[in-house]
Image (cartoon, rainbow, N blue to C red; front, side, top):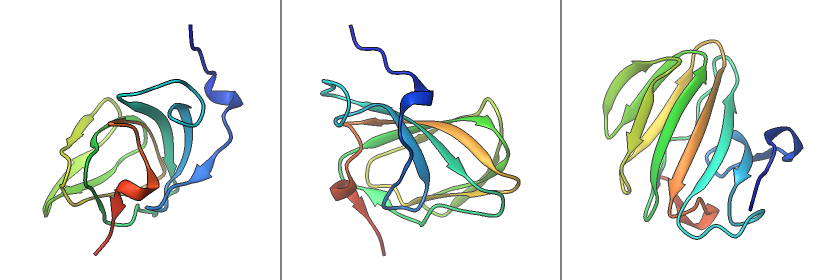
Length: 117
């Protein structure tokens, strides 16, 4: 049985500029097909616009509000919203007053699968 407490995970900055704490991923558990992390974006901040070659992503907003962009389409998002980001889709999230969200990637997140303009 694999159980990881969020509070015990060390935060790090991903290639897109968000600060995350991996809950379950390739670095801390024997996962094969997905990863789960908590991400925080400060007030007025944003991830760098990017895409993933292999990973499909889910974002689930826990706190805060922002604007989500996927392949040029913009939508306002807030607590309780689940967002599907298909593999290969350009995406970026901008935070209004600070955002805290869960991110799930399948296959698991890897820096090498993150691409920029």
